[in-house]
Image (tube, helix red, strand yellow):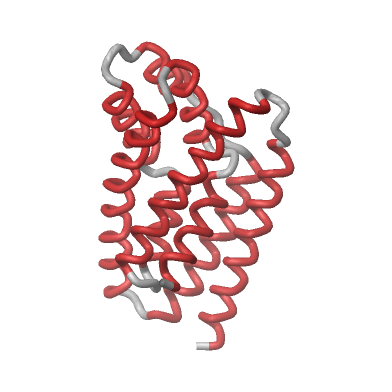
Amino acid sequence: MHAFLIGFGVIFIAEMGDKSQLMALTFAARYRAIPILIGITIATAFVHACSVALGAIVGVALPTRAIAIVAGIAFFAFAVWTLRGDDLSEDEASQADRSNRSAVVAASVAFFLAELGDKTMLATITLATHEGLLGTWAGSTVGMVAADALAIVVGQQLGTRLPERAIRIGAAVAFVGFGAALVFQGVRG
């Protein structure tokens, strides 16, 4: 349960202001929300399963103290990445915009490709190096889907009046907190 809650919290926060939320909004303009969320869930579950597997391999291969320190530093980098922002590339926007396939297939493919190498994938790998694998996978998947669902609902209600900068700053502060806790844990041993 601890791994689930940590995975959910970290990924939910990481997803705030991320390009996946922009994609969710783009798909929501064209399709109903439920098929989009199903597609997001399919893609996220697969990407995060691969991330957790990779994190488990790294976690076994490296000493725990080193992993905690490197993971903490990675979270500091995620904070900077979050502050810098994330934009939807033209290819990603056109893929969401021009797809004539079903909403589930279109969202699944688009989100799968967008999440490869994204900060939420890297954060999931990092968490899986020292948290429970099933909990990390389930929590990170649910966290991402919840954040994207929130983006769809809030975006439909508020349009362009979302305080994106405030969301980015809050997410960055949370990443710094997680990072500091991990570095402290690694240094203390």
